[in-house]
Image 1 (cartoon, rainbow, N blue to C red):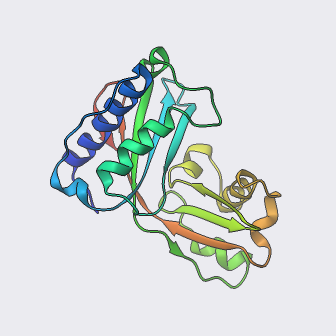
Image 2 (spheres, helix red, strand yellow):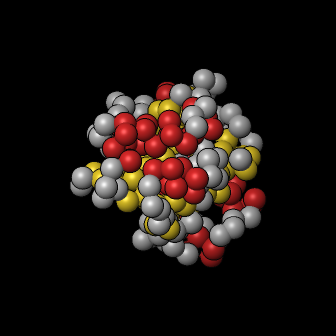
Length: 195
């Protein structure tokens, strides 16, 4: 981190190539710049165009794989996001692709719910919640896209983990934050922009 704008273009184009190959049943064969051999967490998001509705989003929150490997794995997996039917070739042509490259998550130290809320910077921080053996994650762009404040974001994150909304205020909850560099297609197969 940080990625150059050129690396961002490479990342989005690679994710698009992997998605197109996956929905067509072809193998993915790509080469990457040397910077992509470093380990990063990464998410690939597929959205309907022009509505922006989510069609798939899968990734790796921890930097466990080289970026090139994590990027291809996330792109292929996003085609099979369990929340949706498998992506079809026709659908893929009408979707945009977004890549978010993550900093390593950092666990927050907080005393109570009010302290936690004060330590999260919406639009900058992605959030991971862990409670009662469950875990969920929102990328930094989710809260602004949904128009949520911090409390609404944490309630939704708890809900995503299958917990009641205020579960994040209870004892034993662990929260991590991370930041992300976001690159996306302006339109399907269009210009890649940094968000």
